Image: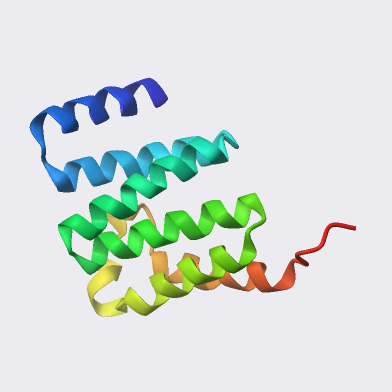
Length: 127
């Protein structure tokens, strides 16, 4: 799967189609999250946010902030995770974004609301 995403990423860089490139980076970041390769996923999510800002579409910004929130949560950087998940929730519009579950694989409003409390419940100090 990673190999396929990397091939797709190379093609997107050649073609220059921003929305397809976003989908590929989004999938590739999740691929690395599942493999617990959080630093790689973090680097990809930075590219994802830059691309979303370039596209200037709230839907893509919503997805980029969600991925960043998820990665920061896994890395134990809970204030950063909270900030990105809160930004996703600010951008989320149930009427508009529920239809984008095919882009993101799930309803990001639901997942942001599920993940955000974890950033508050987990202590920031290691015992």
